[in-house]
Image 1: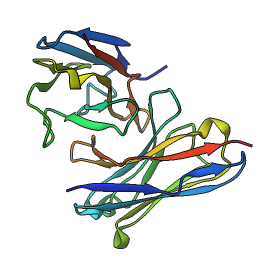
Image 2 (image 1 turned 135 degrees about the horizontal axis):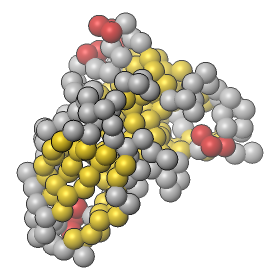
Image 3 (image 1 turned 60 degrees about the vertical axis):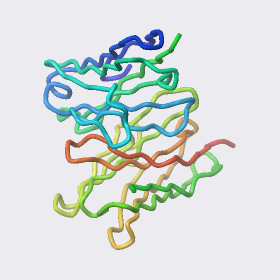
Length: 109
Length: 120
């Protein structure tokens, strides 16, 4: 069981807005920035959001937010190439470890 | 451009050892914390461990599943990160990724991964 909780699957149509969530606690998400990673067909992960920052080369249809102990990744204007597995992670100071969510499989219909 | 290139993966018997390397370029390696993250076949991402930078005394942290068996080290003069894996178990079979940690303590860049297979 993962320390961070993500939806197992989310789907949306091209052009739609979808939001993925990542829920933790005060020891992790409540205290630290969250990273979001995209993994297409089990290739190498790619960071699509770190904290509230968009990495260079990532389309601005990706955005991130956090409220209390839940972080969210929103994709506005969903594209076929966004179909992937998405993982969240952050530091947990009580565990002295990085914790990951179990991942969300995003399907673009 | 940030580049992280892992090497050293392969097939090893249970109980054996293996050393992975990660060659970094395109950024000031010595400034950054570095992580190892793995992914078993068909599973999600699992953090293995972290080495902090010189300013933080190169301290390390490990996941409970590998503590006492794996050791992370770095050579800032060679822009290289290492993962020494001892007493390997079949459940250590995974693709191992080298990852750069950013100022927010979150991973910003990933390598392409190297496959470690532990099997007799």
